[in-house]
Image (tube, rainbow, N blue to C red; front, side, top):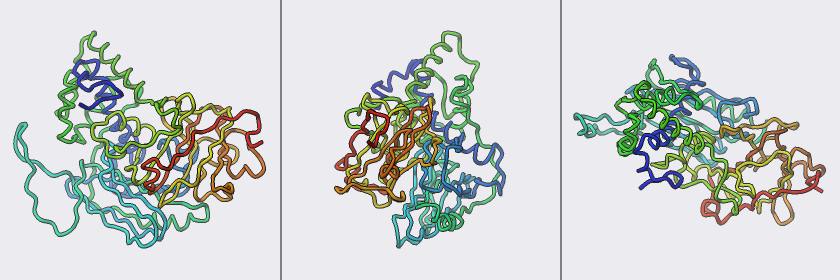
Length: 448
């Protein structure tokens, strides 16, 4: 039986439990719908940037970007929201020219159903032929896939009518912008024109009635896989289902109290603030990353903090854990991270510092030198004679030879650290490469 943070799913059969699990189940839909709305608006039309076409981020993300949580500071993003409309489409990816590139296709639940990855020279790009989910025939609970005619090219069946295409393009520094832009400009989406009316999100702090009503509409727009029908039977007390059963004004006062209690519990569970791996120093990505199955809690937490995460074999994000088990660090302290060497990766690696917001999202933080990450392409990054890399973290510049290895902390908010390996090596995935915990230092000058 699947479980949620040690709580059996079977306990969702009461209204209180059903509300808790349904709120978490719906969170990824709410988050992707929020990103879609920010990108293409409520009534997208052909030619609208980002709708059935790629829209490009031309400069690295910074503190002013407060839409996409966990943005990576050393890649450029290109993003498209594709409405298949029953006619299919194509995503055209050009040759990468030797740079690391990842283009992942996601459904509205946050699962990556197709990934293109270029790890260097030699790739010829790719054309991804997309069609919507296979149509079904039958009636009631008895349906079967309609027979399909043979096709003479590879076709990818998207799980739903909406596809989020997210490209990450390696950027080695300001001098590399022109080459990265050339790759972006050659990305293309081809599909027949359509003018859908996308289902809209609700804020995470909306009343539970508004939140579940938005989730209901998003479920109707993006039918879940048949394997999840058992989940909807378990939460039947809430009457949220692919059939569109939820009504805000249906519940009596005692029922409303039970729903509110369940929602409050879900909101606490969604914002992961501590880890059981405090002695290890890092939280490794689960095998389910990017293809979550019934691990709905992991999916919700990931979509809140690091939306657009592909499978860990493509990009492996590790999050630092403080000595007390917290997933964030006080910005007033001084810290050192000593990597035993560069994380093994066929692409590249980076360590990014984020401001940890109370709602669980991660934002790049303002700092006096505008540095948000250190990694494989950081100019002047210094190594010790044994190959190890000391990274100094805090508000105060450690000075001298330590400055190139300094990650500035935000002025007041707590911060989080995410170590990423792009095209990670087996040594990292199997935990044979193990970065030590972040070390808290004493004194005002951490480098002395």
